[in-house]
Length: 360
Image 1 (cartoon, rainbow, N blue to C red):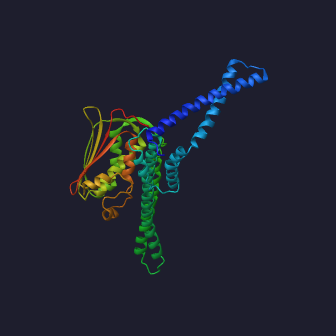
Image 2 (image 1 turned 180 degrees about the horizontal axis):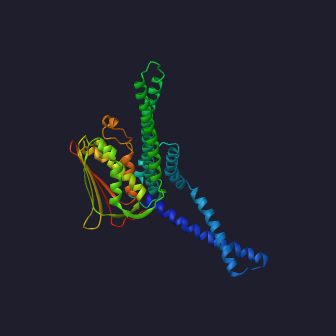
Image 3 (image 1 turned 45 degrees about the vertical axis):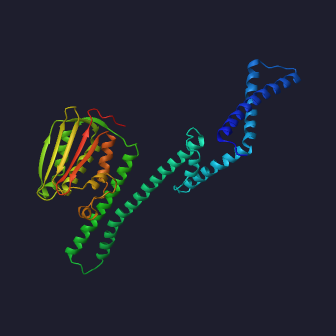
């Protein structure tokens, strides 16, 4: 006989109430008969404790027998077994599960525990699937970035075995091997740095310091790069004091300035401005007259290993991790970074820090 769902729930509720009554009534009856048989009555508090424990035990026994009732067991088999199978699939690495059939059967019953459990399993499978996809993409990107310099090193090392090479050719090949080795070292260093920053356990040494002085040092440290390309610098730095980790922020400015230099053509212009806003925010703008980016590239520019133009970036070098590190450091300082760019007209990076940043 198929009972209506509301009737089943009512019967289940009545069964629980009846089990409680039977458990505690049976407990009092048994203990009373036992005390009469031994002619001994413990203290009232002791009797209450014994009755309570025995009542819970009898209630558990009643609930055990209730679960063996056919329609209760059929409900468990109908919903619990598919959910257990879905969790077993996730444990084996398969996150493509579908419990929509069972979810539809419980539609409109958001207070039902099976409904909430099914929703939670679906949500967990979706999130784990996304994480697995990101992990595989990360491994693929790392493998690709490592394979390229390794292939160059292997190829030119083999070419050096040729005894007929001229001293000039030999020196050229050794320079390429050195350059690719440095590229591998930089990739490894950036991966370790990014992993450390994302672990939420990276040490911070917060202090007040002059941000305008730090920016000037970063500009001077990059002089060999911008001087070689005869880039014109337009610098306007107000006196700014910021509370931050000075060492981490050094990496931010060096990375951003080097990036602007890299993509700015010879005799181009880079503008670096730092100022306080009316509401006492610290704003830093780094603008270049480089090759720029389209809208789609701007959306992904801070993603790990992302390179706006694969063929173009191969000529400029880099692993696509620099801006990811910059974004993570600024996020940790509760700041904000934006990019405004147009192809052929350059790029502007805007970094903004609140007056009193609240850090982790």
